[in-house]
Each structure stands twice: as structure tokens, then as C-alpha cells.
Length: 232
Length: 145
Image (cartoon, rainbow over all chains, first blue to last red; front, side):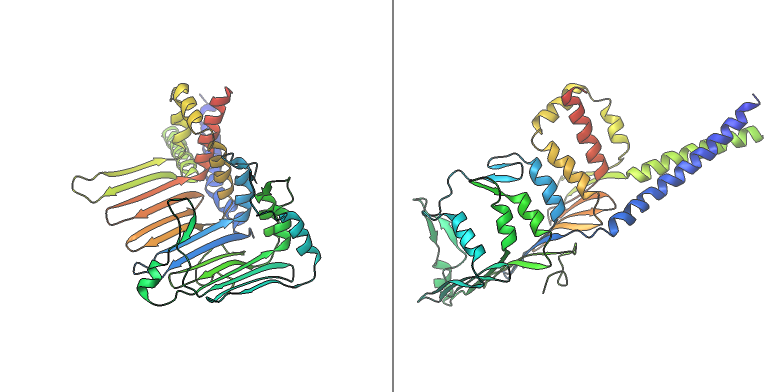
């Protein structure tokens, strides 16, 4: 009977100390994560229609790296996409990639179409740059027709009467492309690509602008996708 | 008298401990409001710490079935919950389309899903540690551990 109060006393102290420790532990965890300097992949789509639809996606690259290998569905296994039939119209893509990698900086492809279609493919400072300007009004509306062919829908632009000019800019670090094609034949290693991408500086990967939509895909160390969150 | 005071202090300590544990584990919250006539209104708050305990009372066959049905996505959910738990508060997805708004974010170690629509609103908050615990529990039952 005499020991009971002491036991209670000890229990009181222990429980209160444990309670305090439990209360503080999430804050300690937060302090660790707040200084975490992950690389984030951002996607922002802004539609200029009446509703002003916007889509913002922020994904930590590390999260994507960890999750992708756990997905085993269709062509995606272990973070790699298997391509059964890589139709490159007879072009050996790997040989082409090797040739681009070993060549000096410069412009490889320049196409100036009559209808205002300009295509430029270049290598510059370790980046593969693709620039497409389509002023023909043939942009954006790709549909599969009943024969299964990819067909452009020009009706929207014919109706509006003004050409729909589209600008597409793609800037991919060659090291990322290398990493993605470092897997076996007919495989694209997404995880290796993401890992390499996370070592790059702030980079705008894709930018698409036309009359209807603005699309941006970029990588930086911020976890926000606001107007100040981009690389420019 | 002192005896009662010490017992009282012990009870208060135990309540504080339970409260602190609940606070640490967080609260799972589901709010659904449908604005049509006769629409449903669901408001559920549950201490996240209670969920793994409640799962102990669920017959194994149901958890095995759930684990089997979701077997492809269980590792994804587990890894995602674990990794998201490391992040500071962040917006992962935001879609605005007129009066419709979808927001998926992490807040204080929980995943938060907010859907706002003229027809209905849905708010779900689930601590990431709970998702991890639940997926672990289901995985253990599936593997017969």
C-alpha cells in the first residue's frame, strides 16, 4: 500500500514526459524536412478559354524515382518502359543519339515550311533543343479518324478566320536522354532519367504556347507552382 | 486526500499521453456535402491512431481480399505515403476550371484532398503515417505474417 503512491508518482512523471516528447516529435520531424532541398518537377497548363482552366502539378523527383519502380502495369516495370515495337521509320535511334552526343554544338535540322511551319533541332551546351513554330493553324487538334490515322482538325481555325500560331520549345539535357536510353534494347529507363534530371540545375524542359493554351514543364528546387515558382 | 490527488494526477497524465499520441498521429477527416435536394452530408472525424486498432477487429479474410484486390497499388501507396511524409507542406495538384476546384496537398504530415464544385464539396484529410500503417497491416495479413 505504501508503494502505490510512488508507483503512481513514477507513472505520472513518465506519462507527462512521454506526452511532452510526443507533442514535440512532429515539430522535430518538420524541422528536418523543411530544410530538404529536393528537386521538383512542375507542370503548369493555363487555358485561355472563358473558364480559364488551370492545371498545376508539383512532383518531387525523388518521390517519382521511388514510386515508379513499384508500378508494374502494362509496359512499365521496375521503372522502365518496354517498347515492343519502336517505330522510328527505320532510323536507329541509339546510333543517332550517339552521333548527336559526339558531335559539336550546332543546328542539325532546320525546316522552314511554306505554311509557316518552322522546325529547328540543335545541340547546345549539353542540351538537345527542339523548337517548333507552327503558324499554319494546324496545331493542337489531333484526332484519330475512323481509319485510325492521326488527323489534324482544321475546322476550328477555319471558323475563327485567324491563324493559330503555336510555339513549342523543348530543352532536354543530353545526359538525361543518355540515362533514359542506358537500359537494355527497347527499354526506356525512366528512373535513371529522373535521377539524372535531379542533378541538373533549374531547367525549363517544355514550353508550348498557342492561342488556347500555355503549357510549361520545368524543374527547380521550389515546391510551389505559382507565378514566382518558375524558372522565368 | 493525497492518494486521490495522485490518482487524479495519474489519470490526467494518462489522458494527456493519450491526447498527445492522438495529436501526434493526427485525425482522419472526411466531409462530403451534396447540394442537390436530398443530397448526402457526411462528416466524419476519427483519430488516426484508432484506425490500425480498429483493423485488428476486421476479419482477416476481408483484409486479405482488400489486399488482393489492391495488390498492384499497395506498394505504390506505401512508398508514396512514406515519401510524401518526408516533404514539407506542398501542393501536389491543383485544377481550377470555372467554379470547380480540385486541390491535393500535403499538410502537417497528412494528405489533403479538397474538391469544390457547385454541386458538392468533398474534403478528405488522412495522415500519411496511417496510410503506411494500413498498407503494412494489409501486406502482413496477405503474406500470412
